[in-house]
Length: 440
Ligand SMILES: *[C@@H]1O[C@H](CO)[C@@H](O)[C@H](O)[C@H]1NC(C)=O
Ligand SMILES: *[C@@H]1O[C@H](CO)[C@@H](O)[C@H](O)[C@H]1NC(C)=O
Ligand SMILES: *[C@@H]1O[C@H](CO)[C@@H](O)[C@H](O)[C@H]1NC(C)=O
Ligand SMILES: *[C@@H]1O[C@H](CO)[C@@H](O)[C@H](O)[C@H]1NC(C)=O
Ligand SMILES: *[C@@H]1O[C@H](CO)[C@@H](O)[C@H](O)[C@H]1NC(C)=O
Ligand SMILES: *[C@@H]1O[C@H](CO)[C@@H](O)[C@H](O)[C@H]1NC(C)=O
Ligand SMILES: *[C@@H]1O[C@H](CO)[C@@H](O)[C@H](O)[C@H]1NC(C)=O
Ligand SMILES: *[C@@H]1O[C@H](CO)[C@@H](O)[C@H](O)[C@H]1NC(C)=O
Image 1 (cartoon, protein in one colour):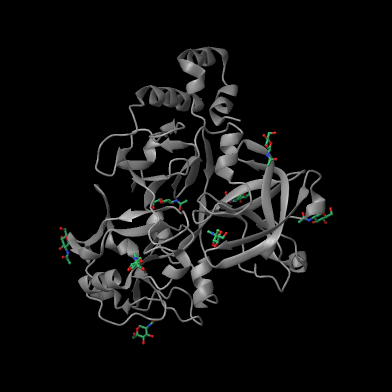
Image 2 (tube, rainbow, N blue to C red):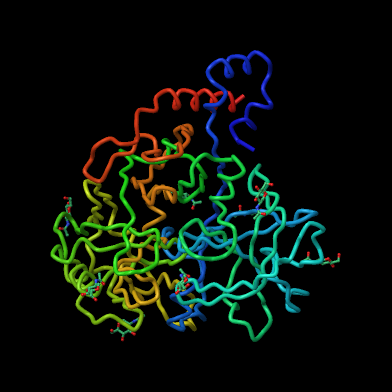
């Protein structure tokens, strides 16, 4: 169902007539789903580096840090059972955890577990499920069932149910909805939404509060959206990966001869990872002289860093500038202590040496600390990513739909700064009218 039409359903006659006079087809075909961000254990990198037994307490001093779980709700089956899962930019896969005995009395299962026999519409497929998400092997069986997300229902979503028995590889798995590329055999939610007519183009906007399928919310970013082609880097796998043209701290470019470097969007990874040479240049620019620890991180006295510096990530003509402090965390790594020890004077820089490029197939990994600060549009249909800086104010939503075909992201500029996304003032007007009506 088009959510645009859904909005119109509840209207009184007069308002409805006015809205329809504009052009009913132009109400945006979008699906907005709220995201709740939580602090959590970064999946694969933590797994690989064996750092999984940390105590993750609330970091009241650095609210931006350690937030690496982007969660959304959906339901599966008949009767519909609620699930909460990760939104995942690193894969295309849809999977949920199966039932295991520990669920009898464990909150571990609160995010929803799928039991085949409990859904009258669930059909097990012949195909076994196997998927290697960048080094994390997952396995289970494949099911087709009714899936609902927001006000949209998909009658035959194919997803995997991970085997959660003790000897399986899946113990770090979570319910997961991929919005990226990958070769998982399950349905790609974005494509399914296109197929059911809920959205027009296999493209999705993501910011720290919402995932907006098929649309752009112009109220949620500053300046212009710039569009970049995805690149392969050194990888043979297609991924949400574009070239980055530089990083500067307080205006001075670091390791500029190393750029451009391919950068992958990984919202479920907490930190941002850069090649060793770039990490060294950044560390030395802010006065960090210690050798990095086994996780690639350098600790330092929080008092030793000047608070008024900025960091700028450059993509073509787009400069994304932030307070450097948004990339500094305070705390200790010792597992016996609370994760955050506010009395200690130990800080960590959260842009660290990439010791994991083998797993992630990218020179730079843009983790949740970066992705929480930006507005991004992942256009799977055209292999493009649009970016802008996230805007935080209470301006009313301004939602426009992404049309199918090339240059469908409204108002976007190319990496050199030329307008390519067309003038969508009419669509914008219609969308604005729809939003206004919604407010009644
Ligand atoms: C999912 O729904 C539950 C119950 O309504 C709610 O408590 C939770 O915050 C929701 N989670 C997300 C990620 O929207
Ligand atoms: C499956 O159904 C059984 C019987 O109604 C119920 O006890 C159990 O809690 C259900 N399991 C899940 C995960 O919904
Ligand atoms: C799902 O249902 C739609 C509409 O009934 C159909 O076109 C499509 O082929 C089905 N897909 C699968 C995987 O069964
Ligand atoms: C895709 O499949 C190939 C082999 O078929 C495999 O090597 C590769 O790891 C897979 N890619 C992902 C992202 O799973
Ligand atoms: C998104 O970021 C803004 C600004 O930091 C913050 O106010 C808001 O709570 C964040 N939203 C979520 C869901 O974390
Ligand atoms: C890509 O591979 C080439 C050749 O193996 C290597 O020289 C180069 O450093 C790699 N680039 C990156 C960004 O990893
Ligand atoms: C960084 O730039 C700001 C603004 O230009 C300036 O006030 C500050 O002193 C600079 N900090 C350092 C450490 O250079
Ligand atoms: C900080 O770095 C020093 C030297 O590299 C190391 O001995 C110490 O354990 C580190 N402290 C923390 C809390 O990681």
